[in-house]
Image (spheres, rainbow, N blue to C red):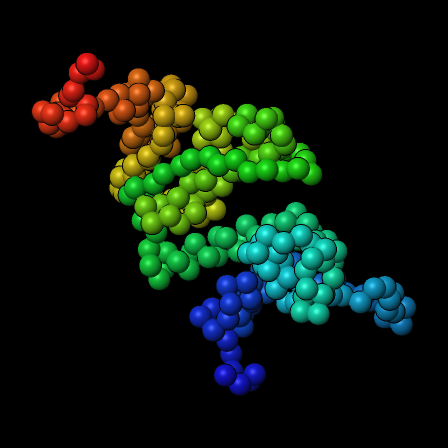
Length: 251
């Protein structure tokens, strides 16, 4: 493929930024501030540090998010300084850039494929956060080391619809309301498009049922008592054959 040809997602590696994706992302970035100040004859260039190549910066950010490498390990020859990429990542996060990207992606996906709203599922997952931060807490499954919990809502094909981040020690049920309201696109009216919400036994309390009902969901969640019964042998299970080791008596 020649350099003049426009690249699409299928033409590049999963951590690279194609031309077609950059065309979608660039309008979502904050406008570049002018370096000129004043009016008329008093207008002049105030100077300052040159603006970084925003496409290269976004490419570096996507590389970090896709590979999980440290910011300082970002290949400088391809993506520039890791410190610059991290600075822009924080700046664009505060400006809501990545939420706008998420929303635009969902809108386009809904137009091309269609979001499967009928069956949805939510759950939380804990990850390590050794450097700490405002949304971290002691992980009860990892000797109380610092960690985060990501509460995610997906459609029946696994497309991410809602996301909330909190401390690892936050119960799943306490994040359900925020997770359901974090969806960046308009959700269909549940009275016209019935929607089912599947949860695990961690949500088998009254508050979760109230939250799901308030959002118009048909809730599917096992209570803890029934979940324990799943380990029982079913009534129709085959008995060990006569003469087998399990049927022999010690003697």
